[in-house]
Length: 397
Ligand code: SAH
Image 1 (tube, helix red, strand yellow):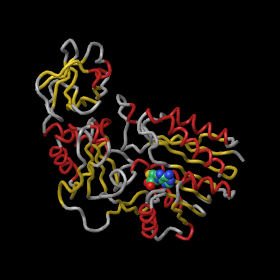
Image 2 (image 1 turned 135 degrees about the vertical axis):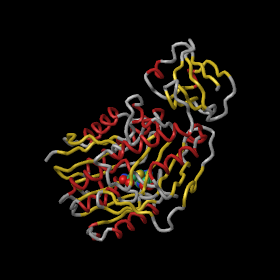
Image 3 (image 1 turned 90 degrees about the vertical axis):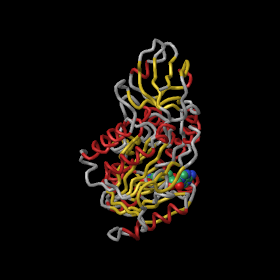
Image 4 (image 1 turned 30 degrees about the vertical axis):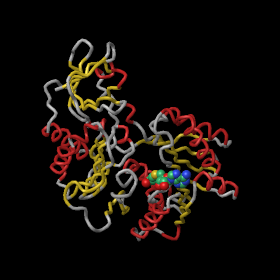
């Protein structure tokens, strides 16, 4: 096995169990290693630190699979890690009985570069690192064994793969994809999931618990849902007793799916729902100009800042939508505002929202701090795994 030797005093993060070795920390690679091959990571003084997947094309030069010198990286390793990750979800009360669950959340589940989401009988897997790519068969086999699923579909079309020198891969890797539309029940609402063309692996599972909270808060309120995608928040708001829900998205196909989802749930008051295909930045200005008002405004935009380098521009975009969101609230109204940008930390996000409230001249307070559902854990050793944060802020009467 090849060895990757760190520079002097560069082992601190590894000894704190952070799994990433950056290119700038590497002194040398001894022996031959191809992309994805397993290498031993050694300190400058030759102390074993971890067993890692080598990524010669990435700034993250290696990702540690195991910190245990006695653990081999083989099929049995993936069987153990995948089974443990699935078992942790099985034990969580809010995940029991859910048809849509994230089974593996990358680094935070000890499997860097591996995402797996279950939608009923189908598991969608996304492999984003050279190491995960190398062990595709072991990971897929382990997922089938741990879940008994009928199909594993690969959605390795995330842009981050190019940083690892990997081509996109998309298609069935086990079993047969059901011919009919895949539908999951979430908090009592039927939602279609397009595993082939939908965003991420087809659905935003991370917002499950926040959608339930939306249902609780929506009773008797008029709702504006910005960046609605397939109407997850909109339908929960209707289920919770919203008087009307206006949903905005710039994607026609997303709004088509949203309408189909509404039809799929006949218990909802369909006449209370309206849809608007528009750019949210412009739509919010128009609504403000028309002096429209709502009791609950939801802002769940796409990732404006994939990394800290984009933070400044992203901060302006967040400020803009939150400012207009606050302006559109009736007295006593609630803004539910999210950021899924890894490059915007929770503190920065709160200060952006606070600045927006100030500029909108509203008196607001945080009533809920929101995060991703528990099937998207944050490894304590990998705090940058915390990407989704939200604030529910209520304005004064
Ligand atoms: N809230 C959704 C997920 C939102 S994903 C859920 O719970 O499932 C972000 C959405 O924003 C996508 O549907 C995308 O089409 C839309 N979008 C991105 N930029 C936009 C813009 N400028 N205006 C309107 N919609 C936009």
